[in-house]
Image (tube, rainbow, N blue to C red; front, top):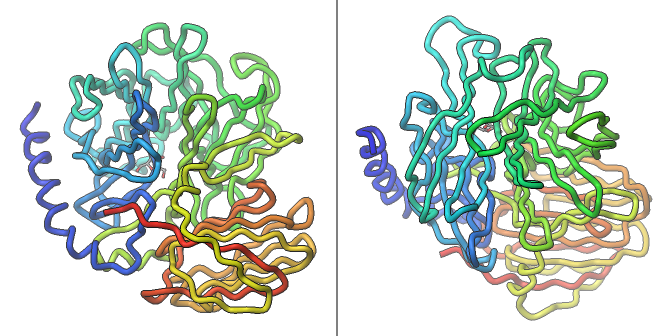
Length: 465
Ligand code: FRU
């Protein structure tokens, strides 16, 4: 252990201890979502299950709720509901990662956790930090007990990546397949085109180029946080593209891969993963036969805010979502079924009524035509024919968020909503469409108005201590 790591290991718990009471006093503190003890959280990292234990890591800046140098925060759970905080797993404490242990992923094999991540370096000087002055290194850390790092090394520098790329090449997502290892990296070319680099390895240490996936025409300048997986025989490439026309500052969606991703293939039509304000950089992992995905419930560089920063913390992950493939190849997202065990006694809500409900709730409705739901008196979910609109009519409630829309391919016949103290996750038509947003209601119960649809409502038990 080097001196920097020794000091960081002492400083971070002190900072967490100092900020804990203030964060806990925030009425917008979430009750069943993964959130940082203090400071800033972004992307989910290193998702895996080891024995009976789920490990979720996340981009974490404990020293600054507005975001600072990134390390890997760590929580575990055996039920996907109750999450236990652990000491930081990865510190930015080596010359190859000292300006951030950036996003990455995990393998558990041979009694060890293998964490692949990006070591970020920003050289001081007159650089643009895109084509020059920046290092995005491919790094590997290993751990036998899944709590402490045993080894840490840099496997590849920018000069080892394929020619034609800018310095932005990051966020390795690794998996094992047919006796080999593969990983995808998100990249920005020197021509400002987003693409995904696929590397392959026999031994997890030495990596060669396998393929490059991109669109024929440029689709944004950078693709962050790629994933690549098969679901019911179809391969999907989720990415978070920057520089595409979309409702949010950046995109978050997926391409079906047509053909063999190791060789000749094309990317099919891009489909957004979410239509709300706050969904970015999702990652998935296999849990037995099912694939679970967590997203970051925020949007980088957005012009709306998260007022919890006043309480010294900011951002959270979504609930774990189970991914399934619809008959026509659409990826559907639904809350992991474990969440249903948080349900209290069901309550029937009538069309035309306003109820007062605990902010932690689940709602399910099966509208027969157009409908409107109003959350906390200032956030409307309206559906007219196939057009769905999520609109804040109360500025404070949305903290700068205004409206988002989505055209469905069929009338909306099913709504599920998961509410926590400062978020709503909305799932429409079996999870073919989701709208995810933070919101900031006044402390205490929230009002729920239903127009033109009945609903069932369950209070949800909080699980965060
Ligand atoms: C996405 C991202 C990643 C990067 C990480 C740094 O939100 O920009 O590309 O690895 O965040 O925190």
